[in-house]
Amino acid sequence: MNGIGIDIGGTNTKIIVVDGRGRLLHEERFRTLPADGYRDFISRLAACVKRLKKEWSPVSIGIGAAGDMDPEKGILRFSPNLRWPSVPISGPLKKLTGLPCAIENDANMAAWGAYEMELKRKYPNVLTVTLGTGIGGGLIVNGALYHGATGSAGEIGHNKIEPGGAPCSCGARGCMEAYCGNYAIIREAKKIIKNVPAFVKKYAPAGHTELDPLCLTRAADGGHRGALKVWHDMGEKLGRGLADMILLFNPDCVLFTGGVSGAARHFMGPMKKVFAAQQIARPFGAVKFAVARNADAGVYGAALLGMELARRR
Ligand SMILES: [Zn+2]
Image (tube, rainbow, N blue to C red; front, side, top):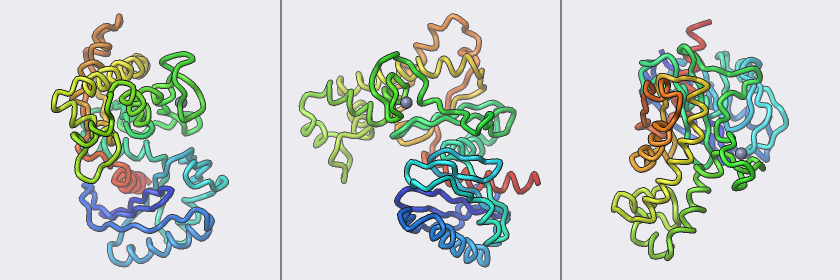
């Protein structure tokens, strides 16, 4: 059984074909060009899917994008990158291609991809935490993706951990993302690291010219005190934010994905210290922690969830 996974980004749309185990069979991408309009995009996407259908005989399509989705109705209600009004996706695509089409926001797709491919469905209750520019969350409850009343479950990045604290990309202050998101990590690092250009020159991998989380991870690997402090502080804040989630949800496992999860060896210790200090100790003693090897699980999750839903029909 094969399935198509699609990730609609503001710049590029990525399309893959995978088999039932998530093994990659084909990959391509095209320019999203959101300014050309939604109808133009759907017709280009459908043409691409029809071509792949002839070659790979997929049974389903799964689509992820950043934003607010209605998975039941197959509607993209709002996307900050695309700036279209609320638009139907699943219906038109099914009509044009003949394939059933599941949509979810990209954090949910990443959650499903990581759940299937990294955890092999080993645990029934999983909280996935996507650490990148933003912080996204996904909930797997009793082996199924949990949406909540309006499809908005898992917006864990905007949990308030410092009332009136640092400004967040959402417009509020003091969110977990405002301390543990990519931009917040860089902001804090610039306060601590004295000579940023020299630091970047020493620790950035080839091709990187800016201070970024990868550069900070490499510096921390090398024992740089400032970089270690950045990850230590981030881990504490992350622990504070996630402690509430663990008390609420009592997961079997917390799985970290996304680019910044590569620094887990530096932030996990301080995070666990916060958990160890909790009064209600049982859920914190029982929960397992895992870091996804494939930080780009979203488009795979889209393909696998599409197949999962097609199977259940
Ligand atoms: Zn926020």
